[in-house]
Image 1 (tube, protein in one colour):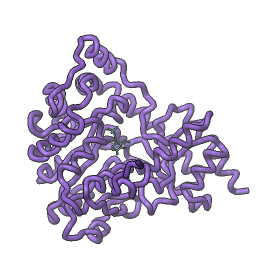
Image 2 (tube, helix red, strand yellow; image 1 turned 90 degrees about the vertical axis):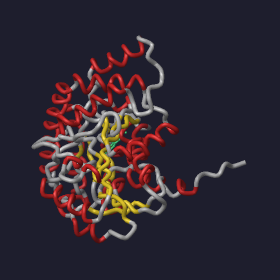
Image 3 (cartoon, rainbow, N blue to C red; image 1 turned 30 degrees about the vertical axis):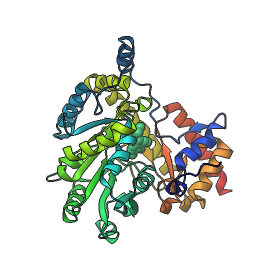
Length: 386
Ligand SMILES: Cc1ncc(COP(=O)(O)O)c(C=O)c1O
């Protein structure tokens, strides 16, 4: 018998990032600027607390919502760093990464055919997971210079619109919202009574000014489901640890799904995450400074090559438009660059169908590799002129 696969799943394409990553994995000597994963090793004291947990024999389930110690530490961290007030007991759920957090938030909220606005270009998981939750993702493009466009959002509103996904600092552009944009968005959310799925996983990796959490804006806590995690700022991707912070009724609903689908987040990783929150800020700050230096280098190089690019405010990505200068689409550029110079970047169409003339460059790569990658990109771009 051929086992029939879920028909909704059949309509969902594989992730454009992973697709490229797999081509790269088959080729030796490639410098990869394609994955959004810190190149830094997880700070050793964080690993040590994971090891100590194993050594003490604490390899059992935790409560569904995560350990009380970790939830208390997350609540304290959110309060001191982002002026967010969440009850550790009722308003925080520890998950297997920001990915699971987003998935169960959608499943907890959406009814069949509810529409969710998704700002684009945007991270690859949003639309597929909304679809799998029974909802309908509705792409809405940012305006010029990746600014929020209330006009674009309004044009996509229908009587079925339930929510909006935002992500700032943004993957793939690195852009973030200004105070004026946040204020305008909050007014829009209030007027249309929307739920905000706010993915703030890059909140700590911001290079000028401070991150303003969406739920900290006046009146927005009751509208907002905050998604975050430890993968990026603490260089802990493999620990698979994230969380949801949201009003108690949302956390209760999401916990129902989490308790059946995951039971609890990894116990060893929860101990590591606790250590990260309690003692990890110094290393985080050092990594942030290093990313900032790389960002400046990447933007300078791209500008020198003649590409139009805004200065990314945070995260570790640059998203230049390549077609105007080279005549190549993002996909052609990426494939040829990989073949001819062995440098991997991700075509822009992985982040929304209207972005086929862009590429995403991740600078979560050691500086000397980054320098060599840009030497090769420069050579490639020059070769196109002949
Ligand atoms: C914007 C954004 N959200 C969420 C995630 C997923 O992170 P996690 O490792 O916590 O599942 C990523 C990973 O690249 C991301 O870029």
